[in-house]
Image (cartoon, rainbow, N blue to C red; front, side):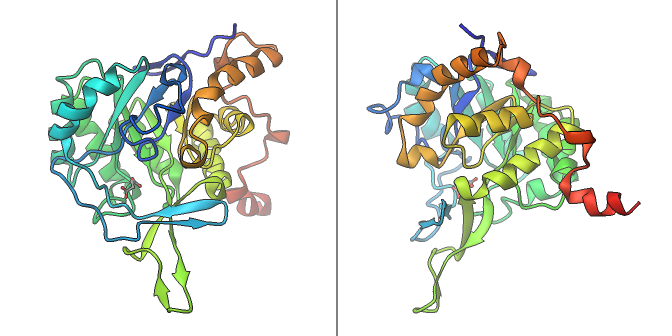
Length: 318
Ligand code: SIN
């Protein structure tokens, strides 16, 4: 049987298939469809220090090959999460990675300090990239802010730290580098791409928050490109997320340089998918003549080391 274990610095997973925050609730909803023990881990919905009601409805809209959401981090707050959901999650036979969002570096520190009380957690994912709340996406659009938040958390929190980054930037490499310098054990690439939907007959935006975050297969090529670029330039393990809906999608991310992946939007229309993937992944590792998935991470072969498309015109002009 192929070895699917993955280590992302201090974060250790039994296999690289995770479910993405915000697409799996607190795991109770999918119990009839998903064998949680098969998963490499579950990342529950983002929690904040105090409860949030979220944005006005409508909060989701289907798009071509994707969906837009403008939830606005609707949640009951950290203490309710710890009291009501964490015990259940920790009993599911898979790794649980909490996901938190704060308004400032100080708030991220407070949130993650409290999580130290729960060493059974496998790690914490810092949501520094939510496009639907004031200030949310701003953290991960600035390298200095990204580094500051991660460094501050690293100083107080004993858990492995994952920084969830935004694709709404010019240079994802710069931001990932800042996350690595701040001490992130891994980066999640990426959160959603800013988008909009319009009902032109009514001359109105469809989402209550006017704009929202695009996810699903529509964004896969964009995120795959970012995973590739970061893997080429930054020494930090990558967790890829963006439109993955098949084993081939998983393998594309792994070959591009992701050590693990998250299944997100697909959970809404195929809740059995995520737990079916590890067994299929083991088969494909063997078919490729490997004994471990780790041999396939970043195994992309570049024709003549062609420069990344984004810099090709300038480089070719030299
Ligand atoms: C939300 O709650 O608005 C979505 C979470 C996110 O995109 O970070």
